[in-house]
Image (cartoon, rainbow, N blue to C red; front, top):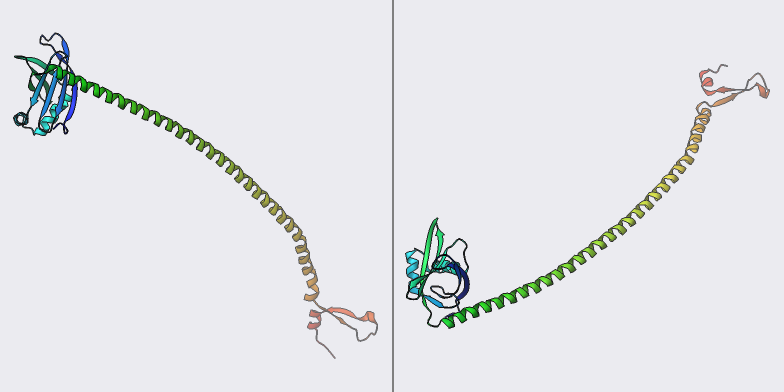
Amino acid sequence: MDDDAKHTCLKLEVPSSSGRSRYSIFIRGTWFPSRFRLSITDGLQAWICEASDAEVKQRAEQWDQPVSEYIALAERYLGFQQPDSEYGFEDAGKGHMRLSWTFEKQGTKLEWRWKCQPSPDSKQNIVEILDFLMDANIRLSEEVVRKTQSFEKLKVEAERCLLQSQTFCNEKSEFESAAYAKFIAVLNSKKAKLRELRDEMSKLNRKALPDDDSDKSESVHGGSDDDNPSEIVRDPGSDSPGASKRVGTSASRGRKRTR
């Protein structure tokens, strides 16, 4: 069944039989897990190559390769033109053509060849190839349109996000400026309050200092009476008030009373 197959179409520039010029051919490939089919046209004629399971297995054994690896390598060179490969499409006699391509493996240049027979219905093969190319072109155009529309949507979304980001940045800057201004205002208010409190403390300290000095002076002078108490001693030989005199306590204590 063709449901599990992959399809490719390759345009190749190959040298003519004389080698003096080149011409274009189209190769449509249908790839299965263990076999493949090629349809080739130069625009006037068509050729086909039916590589059966047995033929592919035989070729793979000759090259010491698994079948899957052989199919993958053939699809790589016939599905997409490889710049390091030399392609050829030469006359093989009796209307047959030989398709060939080269590749390198472990430093050795190798060449694969497959013989193609004339198509029993060239017109049908050419139409199939053209239909495939047209369908591929339509799919590619639709994909380009979808990608373009998707890109435009992403562009609009990116511009919207950029504008929103700029708005957020501006709002953030305004908020930070307002918050900083409020903080400065509160800080200056606190500083002013602290200055007022400092000035009031200074005034209170200046008022308190004179009272403290007077208390100290009074305690110094007033303490003399307490520390040196005096007694009034009356002269026994005189009755007049003026005859009495004040004597220090320490002096009176030092005397001895005599009779």
